[in-house]
View 1 (tube, rainbow, N blue to C red):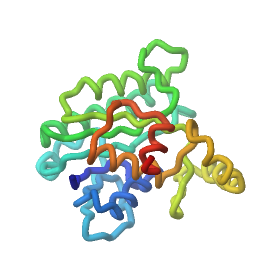
View 2: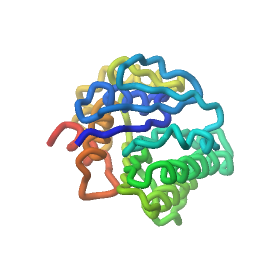
View 3: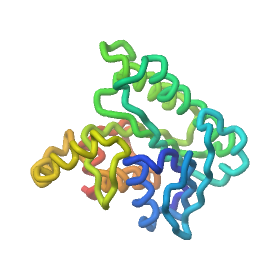
View 4: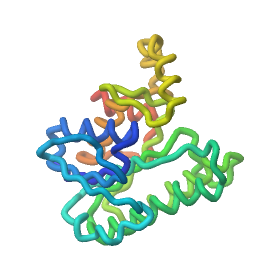
Length: 224
């Protein structure tokens, strides 16, 4: 089954990884990216919408029809921002977009990049984990055709991808000599290429779990 995918966040490290895999994959027929700025890719499969206010995409509804998959890769670290800001950017923005997508495409599969340590009980000690847990629970309760929550831990950039966060790029450079060792820690380490392949495979073929941890991502992305 070939998919027609919408990607949010393709200018970020994870979203760009997903975009590159989509453009290369025979399982993906077409891709629409929605960004605040151009993604910098030119491909016959690709369409791009530049939209400054991602908190309100209602004006784009007509342009979102005809797609059967959403890869939602927008995200932000909780470091350096208030709890209210993190909640608004993480929870409210995602749910607002998900609601518009559902109205435009009733039979859409929603794949969300969450994170290892997310708290499904919404009662744990870490505020970010509670917010992510609430978001996952809300998405899973929405009437998508299917919904999958991907919970990677450490993600290594591949294919020349760089993070927009300078500190992360420094960390990746320091880790690079150890990448051959890190790849053996499949329960806690993956990379942008494997993650992208795993998301495409799950969207196209389904999976027997709605929440996928790093080990699941690696197994699927490596074709195990």
